[in-house]
Length: 286
Image (cartoon, rainbow, N blue to C red; front, top):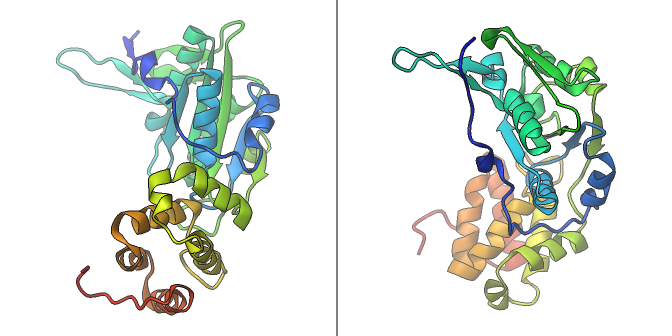
């Protein structure tokens, strides 16, 4: 049997001190579902899907493993692979097998697959044994079966953007049936304003015109219409507000338009002129 290696458990300790405003009431939901039901959050980018799991893990003092999925992910990335090191070939665990090991060592673990629908249909099937009653993965490469010890708990969750984004697949029906899927939208303006006042540094907020947050949110909401290829997420909005406080409104808006291409860029420039009374040029950032 090959020697088995993995990243030390302490590297998966939840990060403390992250700012998160739970406008969707997710943590209350997690209290009921944790270790009982697999869950995938479905929604647009930048609304705090991953952050909600990270901050919940910190509250529960539970190790958390996150893995970014894409169509290039193969079974060896998920399960593990042999690594040639001198005359040795240890089997280095992937995120799925590591999650079992940490749950058995610590007693609990959260496994988050980011953009789970980035996995190809073939790779989605690798998850089935972990996501159903079996709660085990057979790995002949290292002649070992990974499963939970008595009393150990593993919560399998994920995030995904809506299918309109490029480079993603639909979830297999067999995998989808093993998860609860919670659809989320952008927070409403009042919720998003509450998020901004909590997560943006208070000293930067003091530099802003009292109406600035309303104007920024107006622009963001307009970009979220289906006619636009790129929509400003709450993450983008936070960046813009911080940049306004750091470098001033004209420079911040000049940086912002780099997120848009073609006709959308011209449309955003026109909306900026209307909302902020600022004409954005693409010359030097003076």
